[in-house]
Amino acid sequence: MDTDALRLFVRAADLLNISAAGRDLGLAPAVASARLAKLEAALGAELLHRTTRKVSLSLEGADFLPFAREILAQEEAARAALGSGGLQAAGTLRFAAPSSFAQLYIVPLLPEFLDQYPGVRLDLRLSDSPFDAIEGSFDLALRNSPLQDSSLKGRKLAEDRRILCAAPSYIATHGAPATPEDLADHRLIAFRDQGPRPLLHKDGGQSSYHPALSKGQVIIDDGLSQKLLTVQGAGISLNSLWSVHAELGSGALTRVLPDYELDDQAKLWLVYPSSHVLSPKVRVFMDFLIGKIGRNPVWMT
Image (cartoon, rainbow, N blue to C red; front, side, top):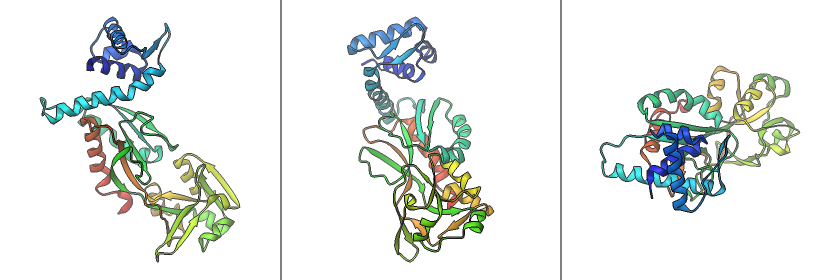
């Protein structure tokens, strides 16, 4: 299969613009269109719908896209394994991550990464809503949950301790819960899909955090907004230590039930589909993030 044509198709799918994809690869618009048409003829399927106004992926194109990405990644990995001319990290890297973590720790590092690897383009999908790394055709994703999905491989970035917090103003007005059961009498700020969660006492005792049982709730789907509401005294929330360590240090937040932590073995993982090889662009980005963030997480010091 013509990998140059596949590379053109993937770029056109990313940009939804055949002429722009061709320019990125040094092809004239007519040449790019002809090469894509030849690929479609060889496959017996229309990969891209073209109109005079726009380009869109066909159903067949959407199904074929992750396989095209994988073929290109396999080619890169094969060349790297053979030491093919000092192959450099290059191409578009599709990376998904929770927006709250990315804003604090990843986005500030990206100018340095791009200076080190000018051949890599970053396509970032940042959201605190759940996402599927495979269905989304991501090359790499950051997950802050136990790695239990057999369709994924990963490397640990850092520990992810989760604790209960409130603003001093909330505690002054409503008091502090003495036991996990007391949380039912407080206003809790929680994510929409947050069910009962296990709490572990420092002495080993087990309890639970169940926001649906509280007398008042604020439902939210954005981690940064949850933290800001908590700082403003709107209620008690469950937060990762990486999210609130600065506010705990400044006194803007205080720990609630400080002898308890969430007991779900969550860690921050850099994950990728188990069927994929690690292309140079993915490998260098993983190494970069682990070196800058994971070796000495600021929230664990």
